[in-house]
Image (cartoon, rainbow, N blue to C red; front, side):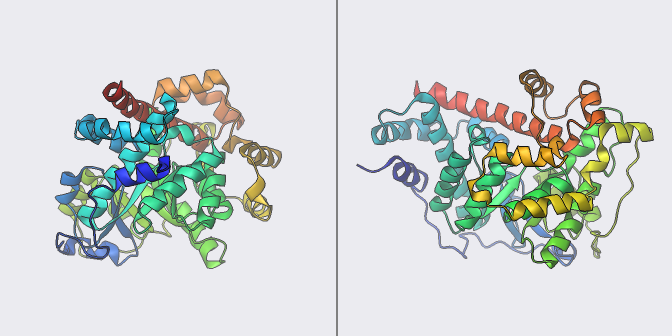
Length: 417
């Protein structure tokens, strides 16, 4: 009998016919992107919608990135209902004793891989495919499912792993296996320095739009340049680490909200642009752009106390003491560490705010507040330094993706019961 993993892989690859390096559609170049490419930035689209991506795709684009939210949008259209119903019996035959939660995990994996392959087939693109949110705190299953994603399409799949202690350790092991990893849900330079030195994934991220929104929505300032400042600081730190041969990780500018950011962040390794951002940029494209990597844009808060109170400086400052700490950790035998080991060592080094010991009540509040936390709720914890702003936004991001994952799982459950 075929194994569960082989069955799901076969289902995902059904009908997939592609000659890598050659798209069935001949995509033309768009000169509007040339000046940006000349600064060293690589172009990705942040969408799972094939038709929407087709309207913007050109030969200069390299990849698409999907996530639980974007995949859920496609699944909720009903386009895969029949496919799920046709596939579930084959999965149950391969693993007749599979519990419901594990069956849903397999079906979500299948849908992510199947949809990712449709994107590969249409655009001959690299595609970031994301792990189920239930795996965020599980090193072993992060490695197992990440490896399975890679085996579905080693030529084009990049595996998205969330910024959690388990994700960092799992990404390290996947990288050692030759699996390209996109370590996602980063919000600060220090988070990404930590990841680059400990895991050396192919890509790290700054979710810049949510940083801007946190400041603006909580009326701490106008929000301008918060995410941009963190992104450019991260890029400079990664360049220094790459020059020192300590990492090869590239930075993705993620959660972009405006076409203006395309020009103001020129030179960042990778942009993953929502389609509306790409369209906005095309309306204002410049014939000449210069790299902005060494620019440190101003950020204005209502008061200096507000800036200090929310711990914003930790989004872009990477003190030498932190670098020394992380470089010391990188010399440890991390392959045998647990997430608790990583948390403990950072706490001992006075950086426990990166991975706070969240109370259950705090997690419930984060889940209720949604993508953008309410500053007044967290004012004291942020001011005391028990919780880092990057850690708070990371947890909020995880819970928002969990909500979309649940919506996807609920639709699948309704189809198979």
